[in-house]
View 1: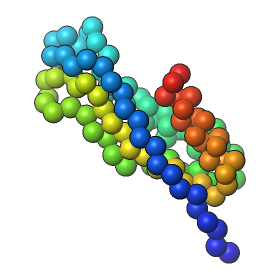
View 2 (view 1 turned 135 degrees about the horizontal axis):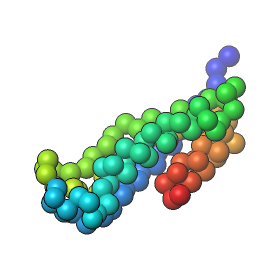
View 3 (view 1 turned 90 degrees about the vertical axis):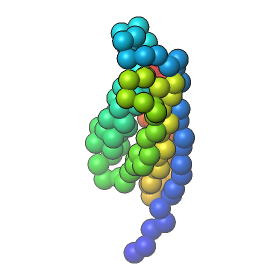
Length: 102
């Protein structure tokens, strides 16, 4: 039996002011925020979606920063979501949004 996989892409950016490494204690680090977001997104299937359903969140691209001692202005995450059912896709998208917006 062949099923059609629902597909989609979401693009997210986290923005803050750039600063030098020694100012790290007084700024928001988008690289750390991106890392925490990726870990939370990867737990959606295991903790929020019915184990009998299929939902795959793939973070295929993370871009941020240009130098080792400067906290960047932004980090861009590109991801894809794959599901078989529209309701599972909606639940996965809702979880992604909730994680991003708190």
